[in-house]
Length: 358
Image 1: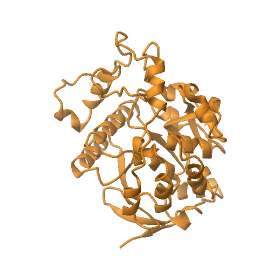
Image 2: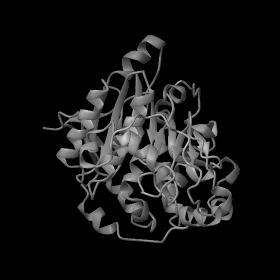
Image 3: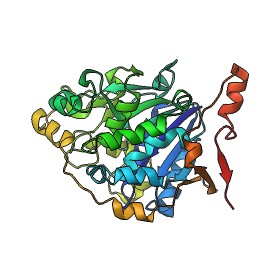
Image 4: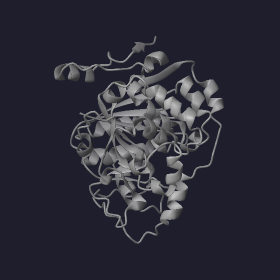
C-alpha cells in the first residue's frame, strides 16, 4: 500500500478543494491502493472533510485525518522567523512527519501539484540508508547567494513540494528534531523555512530523483506534462483561470465532489499536453516572486495559544486523540531486527511513544 500525505490550512475553504484535486489526479492514474494522511488545523470544516472522505472512498482508497498543534518549542523558534507566516504554518507540518505517522516510508505532496503519472513509480524507489528522495530545485540558482549563506549547496538543494521520506531512517537519528529547531535558531532570516530546514538537516544524505517527479510548470518549455508530476510552484497556480494548467486542473476537479460547485462541464481526463499559446511570465520575474518573500513576524500570538509541551493530533475519521510528549519526540527510534518484524511494526503504532488521551 502506498502511503501519501498532504498538509494544508483551509481558512477560505479552497485549499481542501485543491487537495482534493491533487488526490483525484493521483487516484486517476494509480491502480495500487493508497492510504491518504491529511495534516490540518481547525480551519478544515466538516463539509470539506466529508468531501475528502467521499472522494477517497469513491476510488476505493483509505484516508486519515490529523489535527495538528505545533509543539511549543517549535512555535518559539518559528516566532523569530519572519517568513513563516508568508508560507503558512501548515508548511511546517512536514517537518514533524517522523513523529506523526507510524509508517516506514511516505510520499509528501504539496497542494499545488498535479500528478499525471502512476505514483507507484515514485513509491517503488529503494531509499536504502538515505533520509529521503527529492528533486533539485529548478530555480534556486537565481538566489544561490542566499542559499550559500545558510551553509547549503545550491547544486544539491532540493525542492520540498514532492518528497519520498524514509521515516525509519530519520527516526534512527535521535537528534533529528533538535537539529530542525537549531536550524531556525541559527538562520531566522530564512525565506523558505521548511525547505531550507529540510535541506539543512537532511540534504547531506538524500537520493536525487529525476526532474519528471517534480517538474516546475514554468520551467517546462514545451508544456508537455505527460507522465510527470507538475508543480505550479510560482505565483501562477493551476487553479488560476489563466494558468497553463487551468484546463488540466478543471479536468481533475470534475472527478471530485467539488465539481458540483462549479459550472464547468465534465470532460474526459487525458490532455496532459497543454496549449502553448498561453503567455508565459519571464523566468526572471518568476524566480524573483518565488524566492524573494516579504518578512512577517506575527506568530507570537499563535505561540501563546499553543498547548504547553505537547503535540496534539487527531487520527482518522473516528477522531482518536493521542499525545506525544516532546521529550519522547526527540528520542523516537525504531529498531529493525528482521523482515517479518519490520512488516509487523509498519502496521502498528506501538513503536511510537503514543498515549491514549481520555
